[in-house]
Image (cartoon, rainbow, N blue to C red):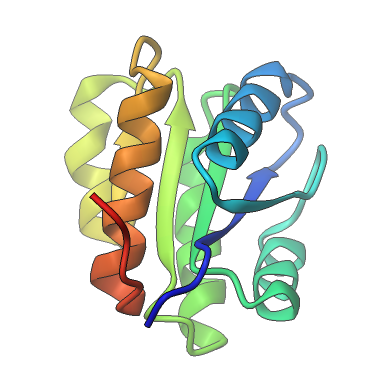
Length: 139
């Protein structure tokens, strides 16, 4: 199935720093994806509702507050409750490397740390959409 990958980019929780999320949203748009940026201070329920409304293929969460281990289980649970097992879930931010296995075990598909190139992020999001949603991507 040929279609543009649709990504919802969101700031989960009380973290008020959104420059990185906006940079990622722009990079994904430049890579040919359709991107919906939800803005600051989103709850898991708001993010999942947006993903449903927008028929998102991937949800990208940005957290710089250090609350990733407390907040990500809530979004994973909200996704499961909504039956969105085929929607990719990625996380970006200042994440200690030792937390990555914990995040993946709880259901986060990929984690992007500072320094990951925008090109690599776009490629990994594209691959995830292809794997989880069966979206045919070029390249």
